[in-house]
Image (cartoon, rainbow, N blue to C red; front, side):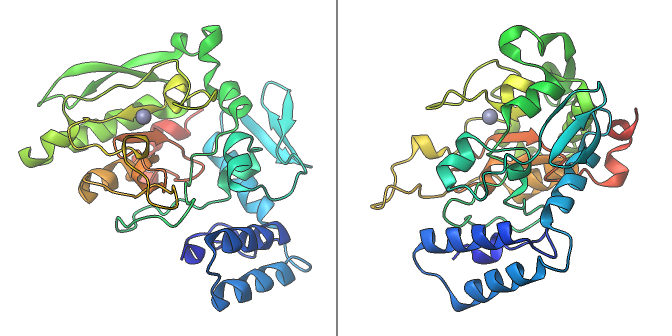
Length: 298
Ligand SMILES: [Zn+2]
């Protein structure tokens, strides 16, 4: 039952939008617990006297991209270059497929990312971070199809002692510095972890996500696929009788913990799992303060 995972960790107190989403997830799961409905109702009533979760989502997003976002106000993201784009499209809660295909900026934080949690199978349609607003990411990192990402790519040496070859990632917003810190920490792990990390399957790649026309996180230079040897991917796996993916994972917690400390989210936390995939998403998983000085500098 996914309800506990889609409650409002970032959104206390919750808005009616959250409550509706809870109810929507609940009915899709087909087994709504009394606890879930009580929570949804409680969220809805809080809205009247409290700031909405949009405020929390706005703060998380603005804090994650301080060099790009001046403020989020009146339903708009105001960029430091003077332009703006919608923060909330006004469409209300979205069904899962629509959320994935066409999220507004606010929607990207609908599902809280469970940083640091023990690895467990996500609930149905729990894919925190899989919804990406393409316009938002293109504004920050560029549109790779227009050649805007490549000029910002820099080298990061992957596992300097154990492998020592260079990978290309974006220098924007501290991505390269954070991946470099990840690389050094992973390099210090015992040899039994090597098979998960070497050779890496890739970083920057201007492509769309398989089965979609959406630019992959790899197209922004913010993602890395570690080794394929022990990777599991929902599209490679036979679904269950209800056509839902059957989650599986072989990546150790120690590796996930290191990435998460530095602002990356992991595809193994998705019901539609992709366990070799990590991407830098500080709005969902702010880097630990000690790990993030480079990302916070103007
Ligand atoms: Zn990937």
